[in-house]
Amino acid sequence: MVADFTFFLASAAAIFVVVNPIGNVPFFHMLTTGYEPALKRKVIMKIVYVTLGALILFGLFGRIIFAIYGITLPAFEIAGGILLFNTSFSMIQGENPRSKATREDADEALAKESVGIVPLGIPLFAGPGAITTVIIFFGEARGVTDEIFVVLSILITVLISYVALLYSGHLFNRMGRMGAMAFSRIEGILLSALAIQFIITGIVAISHTI
Image (tube, rainbow, N blue to C red):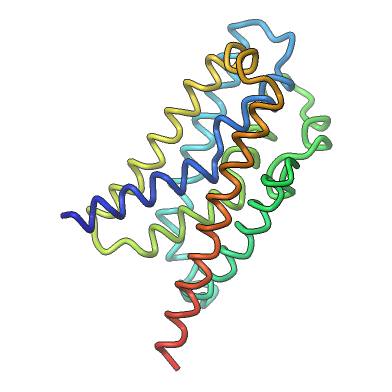
């Protein structure tokens, strides 16, 4: 039971860090400036549905994707670790990671409500890094209990994201752009350690099969 709870804490912390809901507040605030409160709430709900749906679907069907393409979990852990490290490096440098949203993505969002799907839902919240992390934890789950813990971790992160976005104006005013960047850099350091751990785990698993 202790091991299961440790797995839950690890998955919850990892998913929260890579989705980065607090660090995404400035981008959301910038992109929805001038929106009516009712329209902002609609955008927020789209972000919640898209993020929740994408992460759970990729998590549940990740193994099927592995089987179709003949990918092993250790190989995916190494590749995912490299991707996450690149994302974390961008966060530490104070940049918008390429695996996240770009200004061009925002410019292409023609309808105001659609920004909740692209670029805010995908790839800002449910980006390649978040999808990779969820697939890896589902792959490492040692039973239904662990899988439930991963789903619960996703739900917690999405709930925190919802609250953060709902009060994004207050958060942005209190944190400011520099405060949000500082928080994002701290998360970037944690994410880089997680990425290295994924790579080490993958290499060790492959070495045991040689």
